[in-house]
Length: 261
Image (cartoon, rainbow, N blue to C red; front, side, top):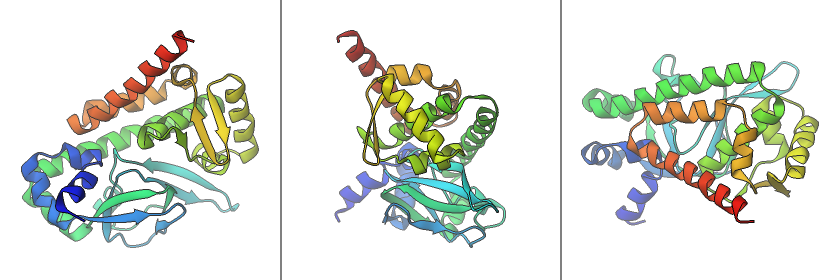
């Protein structure tokens, strides 16, 4: 793979894209591109973290397993993220099970190398620590969301957030994945997505969901979708803001389509 192609792939991750050219050039020789197939367990709970990952188009869930055999998603990571970094700041052990939800690629670097670079390059440290603050804001907002908002509005938030991370028309979201994301039964997800389809907000295929009315889906989603997006926009530099513009463009295009029908 040519260096230019590698650089283009690395900088599909918005944190790497947000680095100043000198800081990116410093980090780039230590980055390697890896494929993350769907269902791949990157880290098990308590496993020592050896690499930090910057997803390109893969979406990874941090999951906790419950005693009753169920599991609940604690956090989700896409191209706006880095994972295996925050949990490694203290114990260097995984908080939960990191599993690939949507297949794709990522750039990874050894934790030992990244730790050295954070000491040597303060601008890299600032970007990653601001991301950590954005992740904390997202986590706390999600806790509040799960406590007070309906499954329907939370489901809309999950679909929109996944769409933002993939830019795919057909989002590879199964009812099983959505149930894990929302912490509900699969039958509940089936009822909610069927209702959203009857409202002409989405259409469902085999293991996929297509947004047919993004503006309407945003209106049906709870306020947390916008709050989380605004937190990332406020805390992260221009590399992330470009994706926010993209998300707004999706919404504007959807509104235009709806008004011209």
